[in-house]
Length: 344
Image (cartoon, rainbow, N blue to C red; front, side, top):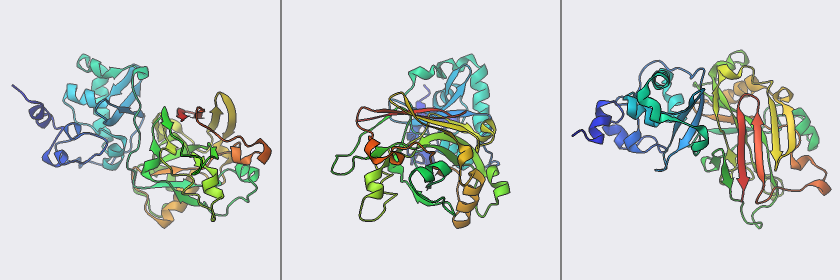
């Protein structure tokens, strides 16, 4: 009788090294290739990806197709094809060909039918669990800088979030006690996903290092950010789950010009932000070029690019009604889908 371990060993889905643990968001038994991928580093093309959270806690890739969502983990088991199991692995190894092979087989094989899911049936996982760097650019929309009474910056102001802040589409953010913070605000943002190592790249070449884009929200506690004894952008923006991202990663070729995308924020159905990335102070190329002058951007690193005007902080003080438990926030970006989350 063929055991599960024998099956995975013969199909190239597990090795002793993998069994020791390589991907924290994927259980060892489902980790991927028998030999580490050593082919050419390729960026994903023509794909819309998401993350599926399984009953065992693993968060693995799904591929959005016209026929439904391909559960990559299940399809790999059924078809005996090795492929990247997470977005971060796909980006770091550059094994786009492995994923493409699985997509093609799963789309045409009756054997893979159980791996084709209705999107309404899945629970979304985190697209990113352990990026090397989470870089954030502040004050990057002209009208946003004006609404909060600040000058447009001369260089991109950078700060960071940590991995504890990462959260999935349809998540619930549990707000801290009021004695910690209570001035909660939304910030819908385009997220840049780096696909190749970038160091000292030129603006002209910068987009060649982008794997794709996501909808994100730089959720913020304005009192922690701005009303502590010293300004604390990082602490006001990196509490648990303060960086929801999703539902999709869309490859750069499907997005086109990232500097002309419409963004919108709705709170309990009311439109609060509605503008375009064409109001960037520093466009996508400029952000990547500037950041890469100071450190190397690696595959899987992500960049929050700032938010347009319409945040609560920009309202007159007498009209500032901060977000609260029970609110639902929807962030949408053209071509990238709607990110939803709730507060509790």
